[in-house]
Image (cartoon, rainbow, N blue to C red):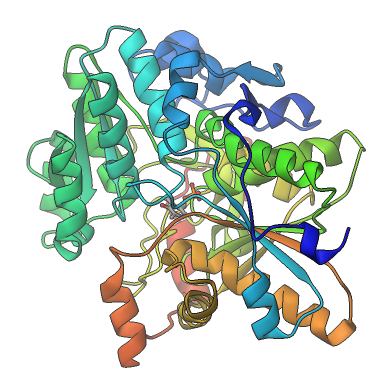
Length: 461
Ligand SMILES: *Cc1c(COP(=O)(O)O)cnc(C)c1O
């Protein structure tokens, strides 16, 4: 197919939207390990999880067998407000780089939350409402998840309480106001509104908080209020499942134009956008129908896949959550304070961890000044001001395209552009001012984090 036949932006029509999510676990030979009770180390069953999560979402969390899970009509209606998302051919970036590679990106920043998070937020809010609950609690780091969830909750008519990591709460006052505009209550974490928050404040006075700590507070808040449940914007199997709309749309669009990606790249924080983008393609690879190279990109300052261990670990700092088997840096690992690029979670999705351990996916870590350089280069030619998180994927897509320039290979590169960076201007400012530094944890720092991983029979490392 000649270049001119492929438009800059491939938009599917509404009736080409996927009507089911794809559950890659059904095609995985080695299933992700089950969540464990932190006290007994027994696998958690449906009833164990009911005090924390909504019933329907627990079923999705535990479902390793159904390949397709229908998307309820009401969620599809909501998706239609901002989906299908465009698949863009980065002609201008290709030209600027002088590469023979073809570069595509799937753009998830076309909604007010500014990221892909809304794809799961609406599903979680919908199931909570269906169950007759009053509200949900959650944590937010950079703020995109809190925004997405507040949007979804106001749409379905559900109370929403957000614990926002204190340093983000202070650094991103406008993010906070967007969340309040959608009617959610927002509390900087750690706070004195929960037992675990008070304990953390006492132990670490002056702490600016972490995701792991905000999760502990949100879980406690959910279990202590009648009619409330906790929801999470990444990491969990159910979240990856909802995010497969990204990959399914991309696959439909590419198949329609006869495009086959050779390399598929995504940034990885807790793994939901990457898992969502690659799942349908990974399914083809697992079933032996096609082959692709998958690359997860993480910050060098929070390198869970590239330097962590694949073991059971706590999901949160307060240790109130189940144990998950994942690549982890330890629940007490906190990335350097000067780290500005997001993707700060200490662990990684159990599904992606298993795929990585099975060598079905690669991982790379990149330093933040390189990430912002790539962001700037991309913004100047493609127009979109990318989120720092997304720019990790841009950086590696550019690296791969430049490799093609050397070898003359005409590879097709696909990456996930997860969102926009309008609320990250302090980070851009630091880069533009030349004051941004890179911090790579020493082996000692990594060992210190890993020392907090629980050891029990079967979990030695
Ligand atoms: C939350 C977020 C990420 C990282 O989360 P994953 O679960 O790893 O996808 C990446 N990009 C943006 C814009 C985000 O908001």
